[in-house]
Image (cartoon, rainbow, N blue to C red; front, side, top):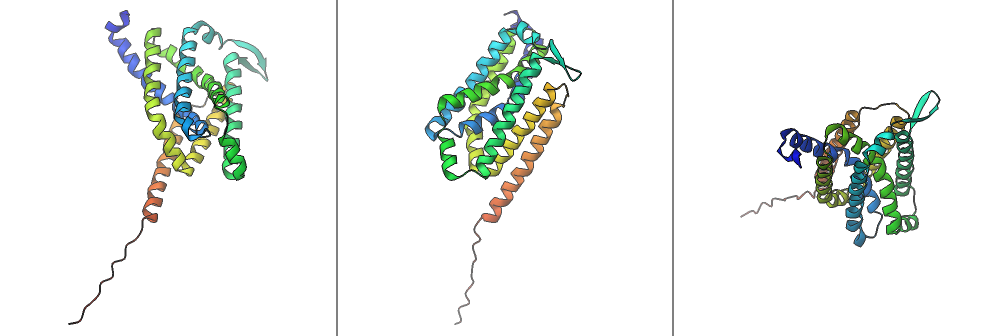
Length: 248
């Protein structure tokens, strides 16, 4: 626990916590949409358990630093590109996100009422399994970032616990907001498709700066917030006050 007396460690903790929250945005969007398929009485439990799985998977990966770093070692070469274990995980996660997001968009736009009800009755265990799969993919980059920023494992674990705790507090509000506004949900699904394509590109050794991705997301959300505000103003009832002249 010598790091407690080191200012550098506290700076690393604050920086890493902020980065973990930013890197967890796509994760919390995915969890919010998937848990929305659960019965209403199980949604909050699903969100909390999903984020708990994310926290546990990140801590386990942190405690397996040697194995995580070995994932960057090339396993074989394909089409002139070295493919590592990390690349395979990113490719698999990207394909999973693309398939899941496309399916959700199709259900929202073209699915019949009976299909939507059947999808909403998805089993709790299946939902948790889907969240666990994508959590591993999102946790991988998060852990590699943590290893590069902090030297003490204790600092990394505390940063992960704080960031997940903050996300747990915000998860319900985010999920309810997404459910109340169908256009926001469609925008969030589009973000997941964008993240899926990014994961596929990174798995194929084509680096896409995350700053561009987050800027595009923030800009799109800002425009949609203006649209929601505009629709709210237009839908507000207009009260007409008729003045009656009373002759003496």
